[in-house]
Amino acid sequence: MTRGGAKQRGTRRSAKASVTSHVNLDLQPAHQPVVESSEGEIEEEKEKVTSSRRSFELEAIVGDAKIEGVQHFEIQWKGLGIEHNSWCTKDEMEIEYPETLAKYLRALENNRANVSKFNRLFQYAKGQSISVLNTVDDVDCPEDFTYINHNIYSDEVPRPCTPMFWCECTNGCHEGCECASERNYNKDGRLISVGKGRIVECGPLCKCGDECINRVVQNGSKAELELRRYLHKGWGVVTKCPLKKGTFVAEYVGEVITTDEAERRGFKDKPQGLTYLYDLDNEFFASDCSDFSIDAKTHGKISRFFNHSCNPNMNTHSIYIEHRDPRLHRLAIFATRYIRIGEELTIDYSPGAVEGESVKTDPCHCGATNCRKFMFF
Image 1 (cartoon, one colour):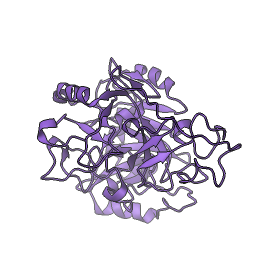
Image 2 (cartoon, rainbow, N blue to C red):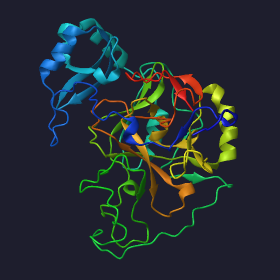
Image 3 (cartoon, rainbow, N blue to C red):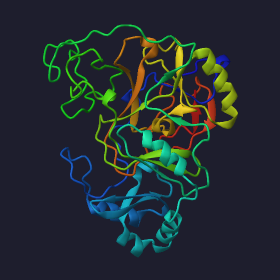
Image 4 (spheres, one colour):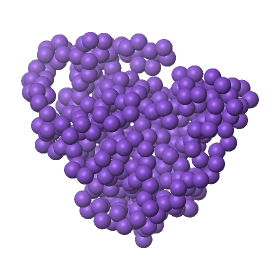
């Protein structure tokens, strides 16, 4: 995160202060059709959907999803934030909003852009199914973008060498194991505390095996995602499967570069709005600057396309697996609440920003009720 006007780098993301104090975990975005959930987090009465349609004017259909074999469409209401979106079945839409539905379906007949390059790139996504949808314009995959699953390091960045301790556990870590002294995940592999900043997983020298409960991030995300084009926000990512609170969604990866190089790239790319810099500052105090950043502009994965929101449904955590060098921690992104099928996945690019103290940059189009209207850095 940039601190002070003299060091403004443009659209610079920060890992610092990405805790749930900036997130309203009680908001439940879109009235979703009833789906089975052991925690009862998404059960909604159909009368709530009907009531919403009677009380408000339809703004647009913003998404669709097939749930339990039935096609549903996500409705945005005029004058309301996206957390109040509702879901309707195709039959309901044909009765109440036939013209809007017909227009939306015509747009879906074919992607306006040739997304074949994206499809080829996403074949390299480790363990994840990723689809692409662009009904907005003819923009395709960036020409110079390479899909990677792990960080790469520029020549100026030292390779992490701080040794990790290792355990002698077999068939997973057990009580008393040093690796598991701070329990990170529950039995289902979900983060226990979504506000926790630092996570240490079992390392490559540990004897506990690949199925150990303390190997979540390194085993990759299984979330089914879709890259989707938006009119004002460009590319964004939605989930095609329900994600429970604490679910690991993706790691933010790219080229690890020095702060000086990040400054140079930030100033160069900011006029085009193409900066994808993320400071590795989770382990630093607010008055300190990070030594290194991750740049996902030309090398990255699906997390490169996560959009900003002033009321995000995910946050970042510093992860240590191979080493414990606080300057070069990895960045993992987890769900901070239940995320429904078809919801856009978002993070707060500047969670510690304070209006009047931080620098305003671009207008914000996140659509949240508590939108700050501008990006702050």
